[in-house]
Image (cartoon, rainbow over all chains, first blue to last red; front, side, top):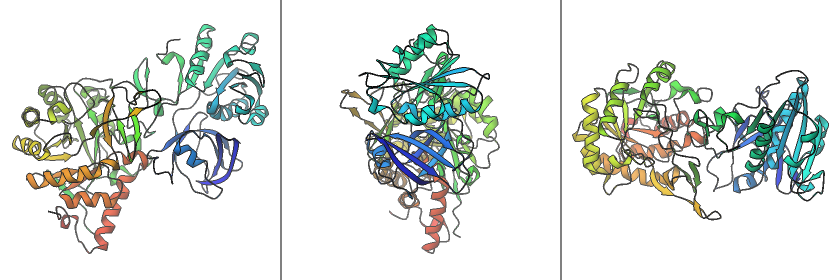
Length: 251
Length: 302
């Protein structure tokens, strides 16, 4: 694919908008790509990156990348016109709409907010009622807020109270004020575990999107396994999205 | 166009390129990304008599020009393979070879016997070199007696070609190769992964759940070429070369060192169609150098 636009939501994240001469394939929210990083000698394997947004009108695929290591920092040096080799779409994605008008809370933190944008757009288009609950350390760590707000209500927590309510996502008052039919969460593991606990206590179906370290992304190498009630399964093919009831987390 | 067909232990292959066990699933995982019938042989995931859960996560660490893994032979067992996976892959237009592992010679033999009943599996690769399981695996592959005992047991239970996959974690790999040749192995493949380790210095603990793992990728290629060269000079049976092959040039090195065919492993994670690209590259190289057949370069470096 060809890089058509590069922007930096803040100094630790890059948003890549990619396009192709071919129409994009069918993509389900929550699916991911495996990116070949070129020009970084220490980066040997592809990097799994979740799909942030699919813009059918412009035939664009958006990747929101946290620049944490050599590989992802190299992706931050791309410019418009560069080519990027992707294997996609991979993984199973989030559940489709269960019933019209259902209230779905999408909880995200860090780069975990990325796939929720596409999922929120999809849910709204299919007649569900999504809301976002986004958590961050400070307001500067919140990404793509305008885009999230253009889709649905956005509830925010920050640890320093610089925006929204103070604390972690599980402290937000919306959780006691409103009843949701389903929850989907993607973010740091402690956040996902805490949201999963809340969901379980309140008997709300909940899906989490995991980001175990991967090599192939195709279910061949068996490196990214997660323990489930069915034994060790590949996050790349049986996930990355799992129902919390299938996991062996202590919640 | 140069002729790149090869024959390993009676197996006709369209190209000298096979996919290595544990890096290509059962082939089907890659069916959307590469034409499976253009691959010389697909060696499917290591199979044991009984199901295995493998080791805990994390099982992988990226390293300079390679990776460590400690998957630990996760698989659903020979019976599951025969009943559920074999029917899906038996009609693939390539050689489907099953990699067999175990924790005792009897174990290996029984697993091989079950696989031997499958008409469309023309050969097995015997894994006596997995560094990631406590019992069996590499324990057999590091002594001549251990290696011989497994091949002897399997030879008695399995009549089709046996390729024995050797460990590089030994003092003299040629001795092991000679020991398995003497017990009736039809070919050897070398090398399996090199035992390695990586440490997360912030957490002050190993990156892998069982501390050590098998190193693969281009980092091990020179070691693998050397092993192939040593083994090919020692034995009369064909040698299959693997270890860090990413390109046709890499593959040609192995062929010149004495490999009659090659396997591609870790590179499948980076380019799912690499096995076909490498075969094309070998063919182009031969044409460019006026070679009519791949046979002309096999073992050319003495």
